[in-house]
Image (tube, rainbow, N blue to C red; front, side, top):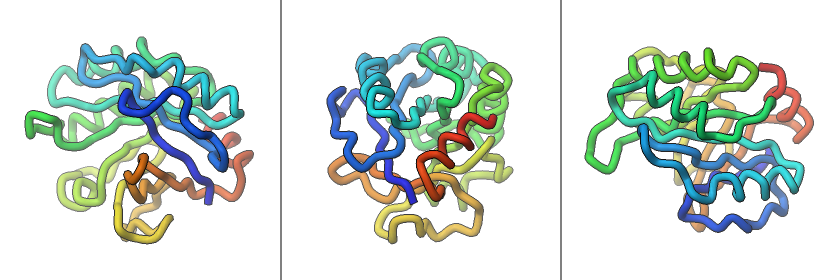
Length: 186
């Protein structure tokens, strides 16, 4: 398993890259927020030779506009991972399963040369999702279990296993090169 982290504006742009194979950076949220540290955080990962990803925090409604906003704002290169962060918003709302599916498909149509992932927690995957559609792969959050053991039957690509002191993840690949080859094979 490969180790990685995901970062947002809450983390430094000079995070430690030792032992990491990938970093996924928050890019956007809704139709108006852009992470002010996004470019510096992505560049830090690129300088370290890591696989880079970007994620969008999905809000309900205006799905096509959100996908377009994400695709326009994130400094995406071929081989970068793109993800939809599907969870409860700060207002206690959430995009529906159908909206999540539309977002993933729209991002894939806008960025066909990039892998598009679904990020959600185990509860959403088991109880809120209605389609089991995860684009090119599932990035599942489930804490309090072993690394790489998220207690779901679905195939997953990345497991976020803790958020202490940062969001830590493992990817189900044998080597950094196999992850890079998969990411570039969209």
